Image 1: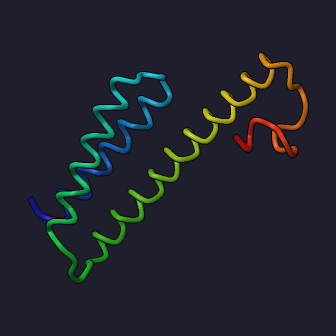
Image 2 (image 1 turned 90 degrees about the vertical axis):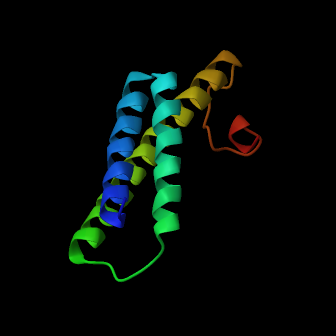
Length: 103
């Protein structure tokens, strides 16, 4: 496998992670994340070297997709935090001092 193929694999698995996050499919998320980490290890093992414009473009796409995953996770965490606050009777600002957000 070369760096291009490894980056494409990472991108495909990031798409799978996003789909799993959207559908709340924890098993698919676990599979996609494990596969992505393995593909990243493969990419790391291939080493550094001069990046062609195509490799830079693929790396930028992977970075954008990773940011998308991060945004989904942060939104899900914020929703859970808000629900927990409502259940515990904390209806105020999630970011005030002494709130569960600091726990």
